[in-house]
Length: 206
Image (tube, rainbow, N blue to C red):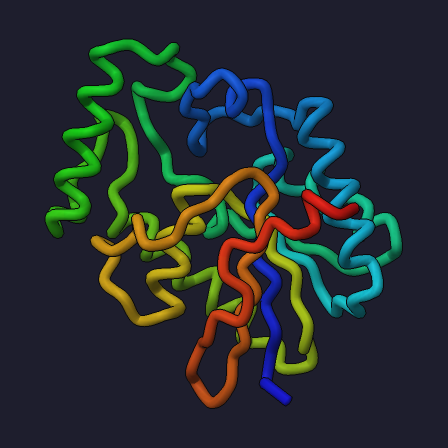
C-alpha cells in the first residue's frame, strides 16, 4: 500500500471557462449548471472512496466542485497554496488578438525556461511553486490522512504535477486538463507516481 493516494481534480466549469476568459486567482466565480453537473458526476463515480481529508483552494469554485463529499462529513481545509496562478491584468478580459498574443508570448517564455516571467500584477510559475511547496508540506505532514481529495485549478494543477513528478516547470504543457478531470497520484517513500492520467471516465459514464 502506498503511504498516500492523492485524487487531484480541477474544478468544474464556470461561465468564464465556457466563454474562454481567463479567471486566475483574482476572480472568485461560481460553478455554472454544467459545472454542478460535472461535480455530481464525479461524486457518483467516487463516493465509494473513503477519503480521509479534502483540500481545496480559497476560491469557491473548488469547494463547490467537491461539496457533495464535504456534505458526507469529510473534513476539509482551504489552502491558499492551491489557488490558481494570478493572471494579473488579463483576468476577466474577453479574448482578443491582443490577449491571445500576450498569452502566447508568455507560454513561449515559460516553456523556454523563463519561469520568472509574468503578466503585470500577476504571478510567475516560480512564485506559484513557492506557495505550492508550502501547501504540499501541510498535506504530507498528516500521515494519518491516507486517501486525500484535492480540488484546484488548471494552470496551478499543471505546475503541481511538475513538482510531484520531478519535472521542470517548463514542462507544464505535458499535463492536459479540462474541467473536473482527475489525476490520481500515489506517494510512497518520497516518490510520487501518476496512477490515472487526465481521467475523464466519470464524466462519460455517470
